Image 1 (cartoon, rainbow, N blue to C red):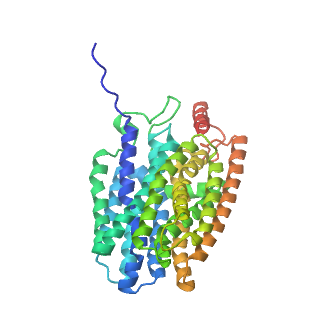
Image 2 (image 1 turned 90 degrees about the vertical axis):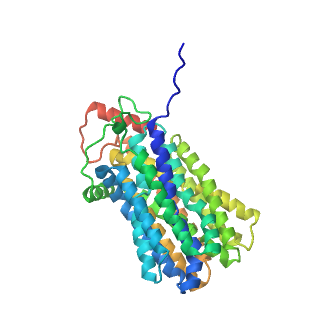
Image 3 (image 1 turned 180 degrees about the horizontal axis):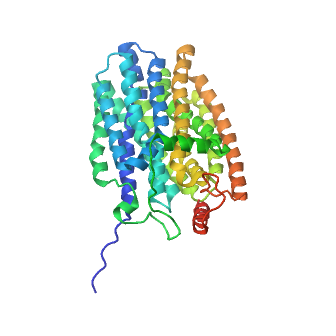
Length: 449
């Protein structure tokens, strides 16, 4: 009897792997600011607020571009948009190694790399998971989200070592090469939709409509998605909580943890290694969050995450010291597990409320995330310049986490009311009548979530 050929993995898993690699390649730059803030200050005399302004521009564009990139992926395809984004990151990082004036910092770090990274933000993850997966969506969302955050943090010790030994300009060139090296992988292996390669989405059944929908894409679709989201209170609740998420991760800890640690005489390389460990633990935490999102009420997970994060931030000022202590390791472990664990349940709630339009709507929710991060990046630098310490910024962030928990609790109540009222995820334009088959498919998808 002829042996059966080995089963090939579903093409969706290959697409997920390419997305994972692309997210890591794009994440390199977001490690740069916290490592290079002090070297730039020493070389040019720029204040923490000046460097923070460059990150404010970057993070704002990183968020605002997200919904437009999601709509462009509908029109031009995922592969083209991702290749263009990686090219922008590489060009911006390359030219940043030659800067001499602060406006050049704002142009390269802020504008060029902000647009590039924004085109490959969490809306990219939402688009890939919505198109290529029916089963395991929460798990895959967690894995791909971990790639973005972990890639950012794992780059830290490498960039810190390069900055210390060879200078910050050389480290910028390394980031440029990292982004450029991913372009051939995306060009060869990325595909826009399962039907492009003659397969169905992973876990799809005959009841799941996975055929590609015709979309004109472009700015108009992104604006329509914003107007659609603005009509539902759950959108504002998620956007508000996610703004706080961005403020307490990328904006505060991601940008200012190393300067805050060096204020307490901790070596920059040690602080960078601690942030890298946050990235390592983030892999397990985000994947576990994705797994839980497939099984537990997403809003309940969000409440738990934000309350725990607030407690950790409240304790952080007392934990920073010249060396590492057991309490420091506990903070690193917890913050790593919690870093972007909020993303899979937030994507799930968007999908429940907005169905097929959820990737673009989620792009606007993520824009709120980055606006929060941008405000924290500038605000924490301003607080440090005025008070000489980051402690007030950490205490304010802890209080905001409690606010985020309240917003998510309200989102849970709205979600329960939506299910009770029969507002299925596909009711995007207020139509009352639907075909029986489409309605059944939407309800089954809601049950899986």
